[in-house]
Image (cartoon, rainbow, N blue to C red; front, side, top):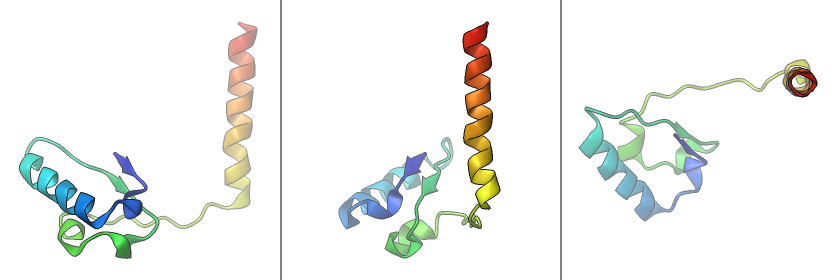
Length: 77
């Protein structure tokens, strides 16, 4: 998994494309980016795009609260 892929340099994206081409039969890659237009076309063509809508404010605050409760429960054991 490669996070912030859109911030990779042009040369790095070409090297990544070569790596993906070499290991495409045995490995799956996940690229995460905010600016798909910054990913070179050769690399974009090897990927399946998944687009996600922004989360509602309720869902953004829900996760940290549930994590906080989980941590409090773990420390009390």
